[in-house]
View 1 (cartoon, rainbow, N blue to C red):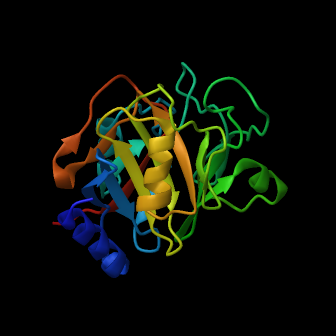
View 2 (cartoon, rainbow, N blue to C red):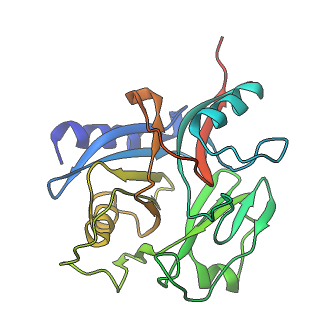
Length: 247
């Protein structure tokens, strides 16, 4: 990690309570470049988006941006937020504005989602947590927004037990972790990485005791402060931060 990147992350940690939008910066870990956006949920409105007010799938950062503009707000950061079916509905638990649109799935299954342990990102009032799915099922908190995905990248400070150092499966990947200080770190790799490499970013660089894989290959980010708005085919759930419009 460069000295500049360390300074940027140090500023985020030091001045997190005063943030008005996600702070995004390049981060290099073990020679691999990433983009990391850090959100302070105590000061920023962090929420999920899937459908517009008419029930149509939003599917893109542009449509989410237009939706929040109509509500008198500004989209300051966004990222794809979990796996989805062909109709863009969530694969696992999905809660938006307190309404559960899809139930939690705690059983093992095919693909990355079913590679247990998996988990979910739960957003409550001024707080966010990455929770392992079975822990959620045992004592579900009152999430205002929640999205389930898998596998977990980091579980109580340890990498997922199925990750292989010598894996040949490489994709552009994105994920989320929450630090002990409550700051939420969203990361996307700027080149293809393995699960082991991506998990080490969260464990060793971002110091998040729990982190969750959101998706791979379709991974995209909207970060206007650094001039980035990734394009591609329609997405399912999208997570983002919004702030009041300034005049």
